[in-house]
Length: 108
Picture 1 (cartoon, helix red, strand yellow):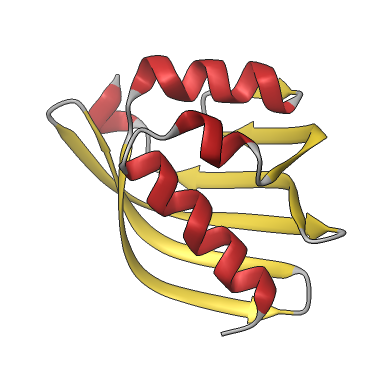
Picture 2 (spheres, rainbow, N blue to C red):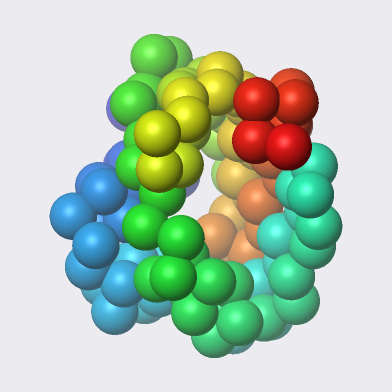
């Protein structure tokens, strides 16, 4: 696994353990999130939302290409689980953007 993949793996592990401070250190300050249900600009805003949501991940597969890391996983939100894909882009060793796709119908 490359350093980019290890960084993403550390980020997901920290989120699963609800170690939001640790997870936040792996993001660039200008981090951008784009998802099915909305977007967020800035690491602090995103981490605040993640702290409230307490979402968990089960990783099935990680693909890497340079500073791009793709994760196929289950997202567990409360009593709902949905399969999806997360595309992480790193810059200078930190996660700079995250784009997530999944079918949101079970959540609506």
